[in-house]
Amino acid sequence: MTNINGVNDGRIRLLDGDGLTPEQKAIYDTVVNGPRGRMVGPLRAALHSPELADRWSKFGEHLRYKTSLTPVQSELAILVVARHWSSDTEWAIHADIARAVGLNAGIIEAIRRCLSPSFIDSDEALIYDYARQLLQTGYVGGDIYKLLHQRFDDVWLVELTALIGYYSMVAMTLNAHGIPRPQNSRESLLPIGSELSRLPELGPEVLAAILAGTDLSGIPAARPAE
Image (cartoon, rainbow, N blue to C red):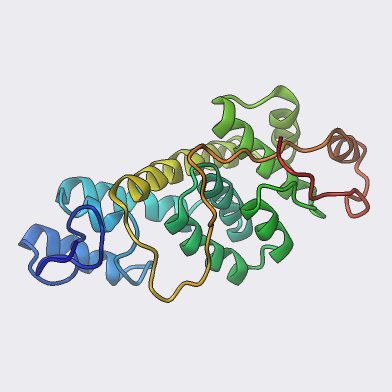
């Protein structure tokens, strides 16, 4: 759909900088002049409800830029969310960012293909499985939770969990309204099936190595999800 007050092929009007109400324009200006630098993703739909968009923008900005997670940790968790919900637009945006902040390209590709990533960093392996478990079951097993809690404080765990929940809301919004990917992104999550993507769990050898504090680099990876 294209409209004088919106742009580009969404299932609803996707509001841009022109034809906005004063309330919408104030939020739009805040977003494009903030750390995001542009109106992108679900905010293009949320802007129909200025109060919602204002609170959404502030919440997302905090989780994206102001938590105690490193950029690599955040983007890894977001990619697990994008893959779980088969959100092509969320993937397109955040795969680019993940590469830019230094997440290993092999890990990105394994998640895209629903293969078991080959982790060197044990914290990244645990973040992957924490997000995977929470998304697939609504729960996190005691072993993974305990291992992460030994490494990070309460604030970090609360923020990681909130990040996973927030980007699930983002993915649902992008998928439901058919919000297109940025035109300059070549990243793709395709093919996308009709069911939720099933990412594989960490193998027992990975958990054993983490518990023993040994190197993960020699553990085989790229097992297809069952």
